[in-house]
Image 1 (cartoon, rainbow, N blue to C red):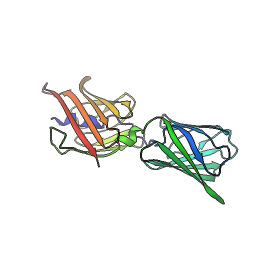
Image 2: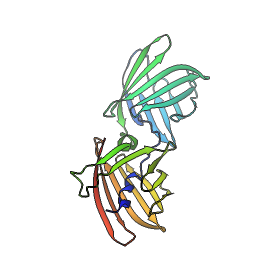
Image 3: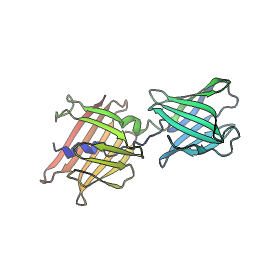
Image 4: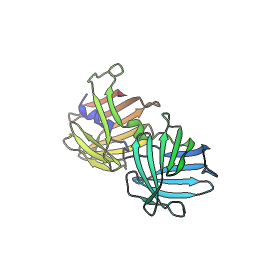
Length: 259
């Protein structure tokens, strides 16, 4: 198989520093807290997240992982939020009042992404633990697709021993380097390829586990790829169709396993 068929696999992941908590959540339990919030919604917004917390106290703000402190209006206890991603399952939240730290919260997602545990630490007080259950949204494409993948030779006709690496570019897009290289965002626009027989790639997320990518050369579509990650996140299947410069049609399916 021509190598152009492989690299559609990388083309369409929204791999910015994504917040693993994205989704809708309902309170299960809260320790040492009167009238705790009972609903939590975290949605993507541009390169950040929009957070809405409902209950006795209502909070509505927008912030960005790794960004500067974001304003939180209408809240007497704190007026700024700062987020930092610890790993693919954990986020650190700092609540501040006019720049001074009020409390630190560590949000940890369960391995099945169905439960969120928040541990709030504050000087002079015992830690508070709040547990949420997911009511909407799925594991993000970031969690499913990011990482290193190796071709499963037992399930692939073309036994080329391919190894894949997918990583974020830190700007809401994906960076790939190989026989050719590119940086692209998940926005349906065309992005230039370097050192490739194709000129551009367009990226589209179909759902949380499915990605489509389109390659063009001389403004003509030369290749379409679709790749799907299994529900457990351990296996990835790429189906690619396209036309080589010689006019030869190709269609192949490759299976990869995550390290």
